[in-house]
Amino acid sequence: MWVCARKTMFCNGPATSGRNDAGGIMIKAVVLLNSEEEEARIRAGIAADPDTYELTDEELAELRPLVRPGRPKAEFPKVPITIRLSPEVLDFFKTDGPGWQARIDAALRDWIKTHAIEHGQHAK
Image (cartoon, rainbow, N blue to C red):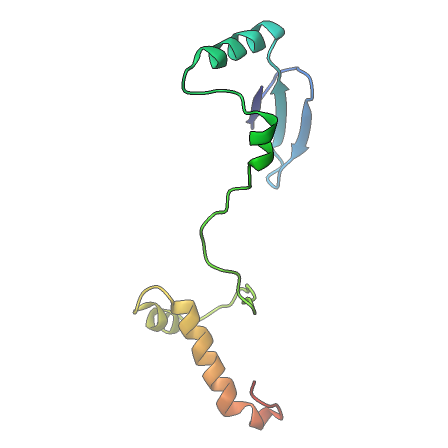
């Protein structure tokens, strides 16, 4: 089975659908299914290849999803925002390299600790 998705695709076929993306460009996706002859050649190629075989039902039942390595989920995840900073402020925090957003977060937390009482709040 082949799946095609192009910005300028002018073709007819089964399961054709279209949508407009944010730029107003028409996107068409066409699913091209193999003919019975093509499918038979593919299966014959698989059967002839000594390095591959079709999995048994037992082997399929043992398969588990791939766990991708990465950062563990945070107990209290940060909230993504957009903020405008002065160039000199951003340069100051970026000077030490990666982790500059965490350093800005820490600086703002320190500011809250020293100014929360002025605003009638308790620092957490």
